[in-house]
Length: 561
Image (cartoon, rainbow, N blue to C red; front, side, top):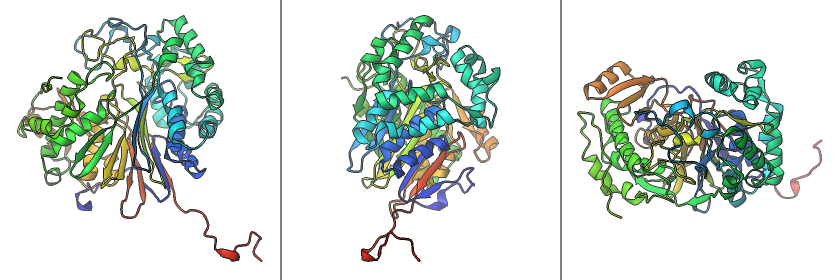
């Protein structure tokens, strides 16, 4: 890939380069936890699971064992695996359980009942997903993989400005729930920057999981504690909900783009479908010649996003209940049909295509690659910041608010139904070149996720960026009627004016989606290049070196004289 197409601007953070293993995540201690597993003989799956457990401690506003998510895995033998541990609507839920606020694009309801508090909580899949990934594809015991997370929870970790900012943002809501306030509002105020935050109750919960596994939640004392707390506070999740939860290994969504293969998460995530769909549309344009962040490129990506969102609203939902036309949506023929509708001179609004017969923004992501060639891209979430803001007393465990993702209006594709799997936009993605892994990538960011991941892939393939440049580059988002542009675009006033001239309604925003991270594998040298962007506390951690070279009889265990 040509370096002359890169942006040329300095990155805020530096990429890490290593030869034997690499982990990226949205917190340095979490990346270190994953790296520790690699150095203790584990593989990339062990590393990824250790990382997400650690993130549930040190990035508590983003992820919990009572959350939801997806894994995309490419094993060293070439097998592709995706694990769906997303959340499910409780069995006692009703289609009309909330009163929608008319005109809301983000499923807002009266009283915020689907956002904060016990009625916002869905049946979780995270813990079962993490332990199942480890059992099926890892090699280290669960107790070993949990050691770093337990250590961080018990000994404490530094409160960063990023975490402090989220606590301040959610201060009023956290204060409503004593077990949450006790941890994050010590002395009645947000934990100060630089202070040490300890989570002893959560450490004890993780230690029990280390010995009892996921059954401690889904069929044991932790689940009983959740059910009691729910019953006392008007929540819906019961022991029956937890016991009935099912994990799925699904077929990944696959596509091609300029000779590269794209592997991502299929429904119940919309992310992989629409990444492939949008890449198919963009493939008909010479983006490299158009240039990064030029008016034509920004306009084209914005129009392509709007097409994807029109189809998402019509076709994407729980694949166990709705026939999702994945093959048609990701076909080159359908992309050609939609591409022909784009006018590079003016913005348009788009309806969903006609098929043949027949997310909160607070999430986290990690990637891991080992020396054997196993690759993991994993996105996990509580949905909103600190989820429902509820911590179950004496457990230290925050509960999700994934019900916010369901359409509160009855009679629609993604309306509430008991036991329905919740639709997500999370997009843990792996890119292959000539059948070999090239890039693992993903990000938090709610409905902005798949558009952000799309832009990172284009940044690498079309614009020749390094992984650090690709994850830090300015982003855009458009689902209609507003085009969001990040502050970092070159000549932003002129760019915004030109977009307005073409018919877009432009809004300048501090950031689009969240802290992206990824690993680029140099196919010539085998070197691993890890990057994590400025939008979160992300860091890449890798290691090189290796064992000593020992030859013949010259080796002596004695001390040289």
